[in-house]
Each structure stands twice: as structure tokens, then as C-alpha cells.
Length: 467
Image 1 (cartoon, rainbow, N blue to C red):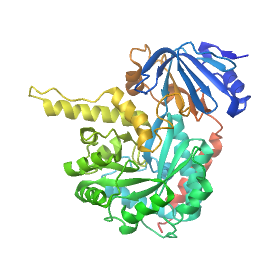
Image 2 (cartoon, rainbow, N blue to C red):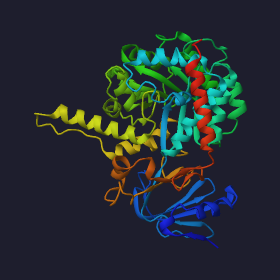
Image 3 (cartoon, rainbow, N blue to C red):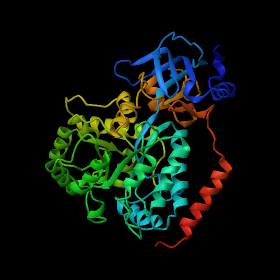
Image 4 (tube, helix red, strand yellow):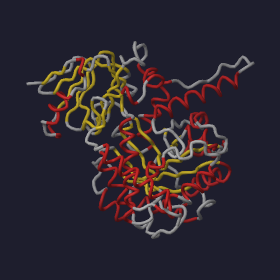
């Protein structure tokens, strides 16, 4: 027998109870009557569509699907969409959110955070910050988060960051790097072998591993800068590489050097990519290198040109992923990144054509939703796993209320997702088929206890002299 849930209680407690009574590996959920925004180029948008989840996988998408013994959730009045994919966030900083909302420049951020607060972090502070960031990501519809964890002072710091991702149930990518400043054990990158063996022994799990590095040695010396030595470490482990602080003339030269050394590929992600030369961009396009943009970070912190490099990426055939970057100065959600990029690019396009007969070349809401989902998954090395509602992929999806006050009436589902919606409209989040947010609430979180931990950690960090 199937269990039906009334349309007015799409994500009711009764539906959740019924789901949780069933073993996860044999659980079947059928969402019916939704507007299904698949982000799969072959499937498109399905009005009045159904989506069937079996265990951790999307089994079918279409209309009038057979329910069988599934828990049937009438999702009329909602949009089903893939979960968002964050391609770069320094999650450990979360208890310092908006501590510098008007940061002047990159130097101000680096000296206050990386040369200051970071140096006193204990493993428990790493755990608390990373867990807070991941839970917030889930709440706002981010089902996959790459944690660029560049405060790995000891083995225990790395373990704490990974365990925080694991404990939230997010699809997490742990990108490990040693710290910029202060005392640390110099265990990185050698410790990556232990980390992989302990936490990433299977290819079929929620967490994956990458090596993290900087583009150049200008700030912290050669040990943290990407090059043949770190590429060899990643190759030996069979993992991808995420390179931060890619901007300006020195990074442009580095890109050309990496290409000459044969260490650029689709397994390498370059983050920011602002102010690069056209030659560097051509090289990135030719090698299939992926790019993670950070729209609000580039604009607000003022990284090189301060303009997110979406036009440059598209001009060489790179469709970028999007990212949050640092919560100490920026918003935590993907809606903000999509809207910022959409507005900035369209402003630039129209401004460039103003007073001429040239037709502005503007990106669309579909483009930025693609960047935030399918392209983000590709950038994180997970294109075959998540990023679209494609049968066979893992069930990472959002149920977004389209008839809420700020969204009704539903005229364009993609426009509504990008320009109208926010975290309050996300009634449910599934990751790997498991409900992580339901009826508007993140599940299995003792919020008072978490709040106490976050406040205690913040007070410790703020009141301990930098090492």
C-alpha cells in the first residue's frame, strides 16, 4: 500500500513519520503534481510532473508515474529543483559571521582572519564552525558544499572539519590545505594519505576529498602554492585540486606555467579568476579547467577588477560554478550569489552597448541556475552524481513553495527560483534521498545546544590573543 499526503500538507509531520518508519535503502518517495525544474538539458521543465526517489537515487521523472508502495507526497503548488552546489566556502569561519561586513580589501580580511583569529582555533572550533556552515547551507538549499578548509593546523583540526561535514548529512567536499600563518604541525600535505584512508576509502559516499592550494607564493610562500609537487600528491591519491586566490598578473603567469607543466585539466578548479589575461583564459578553456566564481566576494572585497569573470569564462567555453567564500563579510546563501551575478553581468552588458547599435549579450536566469546546480557539480567533480534531477543521479533536491506570499502566482519557475525565492520558501531538502529539512525546519538539530556551542567558541576565539 502507498501512503498519501494531502496537498495542503506537502511536507507534513505525518509524511516524515511515514518515511522514517521505512528502512532508508528500501524507501520510496513519489512527489506528484509539482513543477519539476530538472536542469537536465534533455528533460527541461515538467509542469504537473512527478519525481520518484528510490533509496538514495532519483528513479524516474515524468508524469503519472506508478506509485507502487511509495510514500506519495502531493507536491502541487511547489517547484522541485536540484539542490544548489557551493564550490568554495571557508566553513570554519562561520562563528565569525559578518564580523567585518564592510571589509576594505583582501589585505584587511587576511590580516584580521587568517593572521589573527585563525591562529587560535582549536579542533573543537573547527568542528563548530564547519557544522554551523553546513547546517546553514542545508537550510538555504545547498545540498553540496566544498569546504576549502585552510586552517588544518593539526591532524585533529582536519578530523574535526571532516567529522562536522559527516555529522550534518550534507554532500561535503573536504578540500584540505595548511594554514597561512601561525604555528602548525606541518603535517599537510602528507597527512592527506591518512585522511583518505580513514574517511574517504569508498567512492560511493557522501563525502569526497580534494587537495586545496593557493595560486602563487606571494602571501605564504611556496609550500601552499599549486605546482608540480602538489599536483603529484593529488595524482597519487586520485583526487582533484581546488586553487584559491587566482587573480591578477601573477596568477595569469601561473596559469600559463601550469599548462606548460601539464597540470591543468578538468580535475583542477581555479577560484575567483578575476583580472586574468586573455591568454590565461584561452589556456584554461583549452585544458578544460573548471572555474568557481564568488560573485559577492569579488565585488565586495574588491578582488583585482572586482568584477565576477563570467563573461571571460563563457567566452572560452567554461560554464562556471558559484560559491559563497567567506561568511565573515558575505551572505551565506546561493540565492544571493545568483542574483548578484545576474545583475552585475547584465549591468555590464547593457552599459557596454549603451549609445551603440550593438545588442547587449546578457546572461539569463537559466544560466545562473545552471551555474548554481549542474555546473557547480561538474566543478566539484560530481557531475555524474548530483546537480540535476536526472534518473540515476543521487536524490539531492529541494521542494520550494511556489504559492507563498512572495512567489505567487507562479508564472516562470526558473525566474521564481532565481529572483523570487529564499530560504523561507524551501519546505524540504533531500540529500542522498534522506530528508534533511522538512516543513521548513532543518532536522535533527538541537538548536539551543548548537547556539551555546557557537557562542562559546566565538568568545574563545575573540578573546584569545593571536598565536
